[in-house]
Length: 484
Image (cartoon, rainbow, N blue to C red):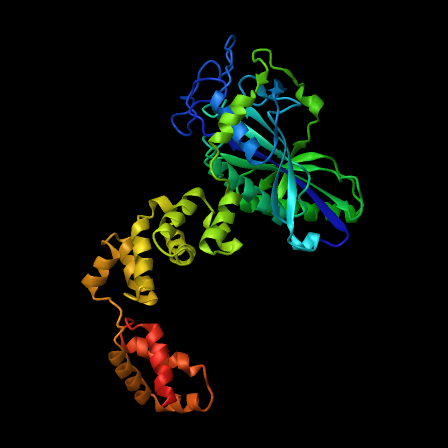
């Protein structure tokens, strides 16, 4: 951030809920399929069709509200929000009005040291989370002279999470978005797929001079569908606003889009005011009444939340906050780690997960569930290294790749390939003396004070033993021989 200026950022996040049916009808809530195949008179907006609220979507909204410590509104109302887009067949969107089912929650993220002076946790307000329906999808690429509309997505249930203007940098926006992405996926209310639009974001950005209380002119960047684009778009907008302010140029509130190829935002339209939407209560839906019994039922079945699980990982397995956070990059990754840790050493399981397993995921482009590596096999491999049956290098270079090819249990692979670690002191001493005798020049330099050459001798002994020698004993015996 340029000195003398302060960014004010708030994110609006659209979470597509993992219900079986759409928000107000019984059509399948499922992406893909032939265009307009998951539709009915209700989501097509045909005259006389009446909506009926999806009860499961309400329960998912309550789960999020409880997870962020929000106030659950006992009564909220649905409104019609007027749009005139080709992919909105009714000519309006059914959404919740001034009062949402979830109000006044919060999450905590690390502060950006560059703008706050330290990385202490910052409390980011969530003003509300309201239920609404999605629009359809326009396609402008099938023809050079026409646009096509697919209404399979029309009526899909959304939960819009409106964050307060509490973020002060693109980095904080990234962390906030990651925090909510992790939360909704752990709750099981969204699959979090940003590329397919299941989790997407609008960023509201303004800049003011340092010390000013009033907000600057706000710009909304719409439909950002990756963490990287959110960060880049916000950084671009901050720089653009500062340049305009320094030049003394006035600019208007507007909606912009992100051009990924050019790395810049582009104007789309002037920003609508509330009066432009012509809100009025939805006459075909009664008020949504939430009873205490329903809140208690949802609370009873809440899963372990990400922060609580991260704290437990640090306590139970002796991990750092960073390690625990990385292990919870996804629910499946965290579950896999815990299955391995329960059958082995937790700290070593974390090292393998963040090392070899993560590398395999990056190399293959697969998710943890599709990797083909069994949790029990990885746990057994860690135990065999700890017991001295095999050394770490051989485990990583020979056994782990064989496990990835599903060639059997680690102990079977070790036996079939003759990979068992050599821990016989006499045999190792013979190797050590042979290496020392073969490298008189390096020995003289070591005796002259070049301590780094101990690593050279250890490496040569390991090489002479085909990588199967116990490295701890190699170091111990090398020291003894050198002391003679």
